Length: 82
Image (cartoon, rainbow, N blue to C red):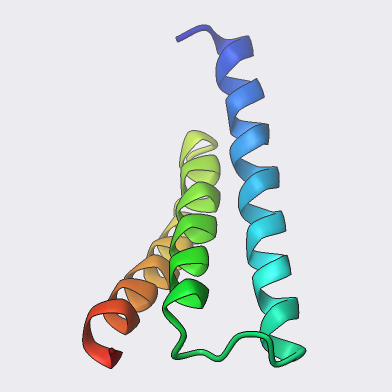
């Protein structure tokens, strides 16, 4: 893939993931979501996955590990909490 396209996709992944996680957290704080809600965990998984893809492109492995961990926690919550 061309470097310019990769950078453009990287930024789209980053922005969409960050906005999704931020809105999700805001809805949690405002009690529209609860940490056990399926939709909350799906949004966390998608947002964390997009952010993980973004930092993986930059080879920022510590942050990738953290985002991957957030995704795994969301998967755990989806399958074992419900």
